[in-house]
Length: 588
Ligand code: GCB
Image (cartoon, rainbow, N blue to C red; front, side, top):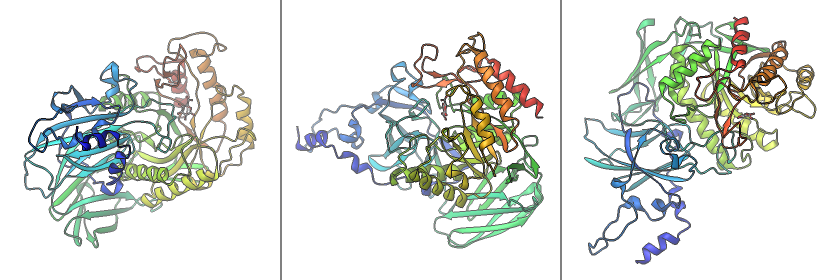
């Protein structure tokens, strides 16, 4: 054995090598409706619990010694079993269900230049870290399990190529979320992988919006370009509105405001316009809705009309596919919510696929989108803050042209400490810098000792999310009435969670915990209290359907959180579903 070999297996510092070349929001590309080639499909796959690929540099594919003699290696990329990309490996084989740790994905692909100057590979999401290797080169790493990232591969592609992704969903204290959550930690490359070909200079960022409080007649555009050409003129075209405007680009950026009277987007009229932008040899397209969401006092207004957010919370999960949820499954979720007379959905607790917001744009449902600053994040750790900020930025840049998205939530249920206030108020600042057309919220906790809504973060938010489980975790529902009375609220409040366990099909009396009757009785009492409060502008009860959760080990839970209004397979609707449907109907 060579010294080199022994050094590698004993090297506990190997990870440092990979802590350089961070791939983050700065690498993002606006890619809507661009021509892309999927690198999805069957990839060779192995779990790698001891991280041997990174430690022993398998990605270098050294199979011969200096004298040309074959040496034994412990991997066989092309002979490994294959797995579908995108998918969560946990759902692909029983043996992987609870596996957490490093895994290796690899595939070969051919490439031929078609006249492009720049080439990128986009990963829709990999949980939680992804280290990318192409043709034996380390290209960088991405942190954050739910947002897209882009790797430039210009000049690195050959006719035949090998791509390796070392993904690792190990839960860690300093991550966002940290070690402890109330959902299943699915792993792998679970959203699309795509190759994007671009010209020398291309449109990198694009943001278009109806200027809030402009009488619905001023549209603003921001463009950022990347490449050789840093000055020039871009064109924006919206044929249906007879818009053809020039945008001056200086120092890679351009801003424009123009008058237009678009038909406004709303859940009842999800009107989208085809928008095109041209710069040099590049062009992008998108379908965009124009609408205004603002607050005044304790009310929320959509396009000038007061709106009550009739919502429900939802995880990104299907029993069969985990977080690799298909378009059909997303549509099914929105349809169930709409049948329940919802106009709003809280996409908890992390960024769901970008397809969700696109489909919500088309189907007409308002969205709350969130980053996983969940429970006891390491609020005093700068690395954790940068990770949260990066995830927030990637989410906002990805979805800020989606009319359906009305709220950015910067977190969920975090204790009111100085460190948390500093951390989260900086996130609010960041969100406002990137987008001043949406409301900022967070799902906050109630001060349960003093029975009052009083969280120092409120001063930074536009709309205060409140999670409360009176009737369930705290059985005393009388407290809720007191809380509402004691609270001096000047901003809109949304009850972002309430709920109770109920095993689908389990019937009994209102006193039998875990039955549908018990859950229903809590829903009835909650609604009778919540619906009387003027400063409450809506709710998103917890949760549309039961979901996997390894913390829930009772015999009737069986590793599921069973607070759903529907069963996990969505085939069965519990009594509370019908109750919420008729309650929301009375608000129509
Ligand atoms: C919460 C959390 C949510 C949990 C829920 C529960 O407050 O925000 O993630 O799943 O309670 O069921 O306990």
